[in-house]
Image (cartoon, rainbow, N blue to C red; front, side, top):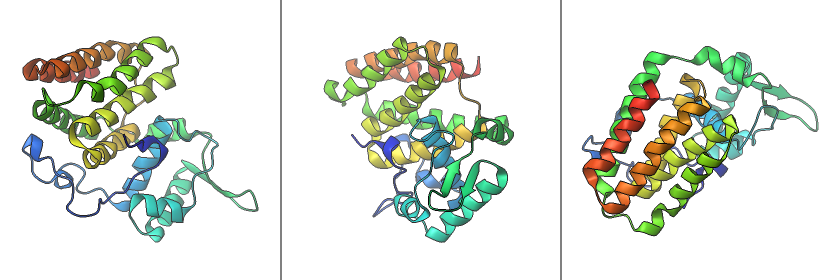
Length: 244
């Protein structure tokens, strides 16, 4: 399984753009993320890396050339995006031998200024559509062993008391679910959505993640049984609990 937590992953996959034909909505990138610029992509993928705790406030980011290659966009676009994030207070630029671009210590405080409940609701609704379609398409066709990694994440969420770790595990669950049911290209599309949501919404409350984890467990049970309707209902129940 591809570990998107360890790198950004390319923005544009080689060959045809990934589609969501499984959910009947045509070209995936023609929908809510279609207007996302390269600069927006850099912001959202850095936010996703922070949610996944691949980097943390105070950590140095990879060089712009490395990020450009991983994202599949130009180095100048990455440099401009990083400069804009420095001006916004999300990143710090340091000179000298140990210099580079670092995640600002005040990341959480500054990113709270970008929260937008209305835009988040639109992206969240599309994420629901994506997952319902993937579940309907894949129920009964996913080998049981391919769900083992997702089950392990559910168990980890039940065990941990660390709020940041809970948020990380839930995000990993949805990234891995997208890949299990739709493949690496759909995982990258889900990463676009989840990265944007990391900028638009505060980190989830621990008690909310624990409640939603019951929906995760139910979803995996119904997927394993091939019970499409019940699996889709579990996805919708998860979504409802996000807004209660």
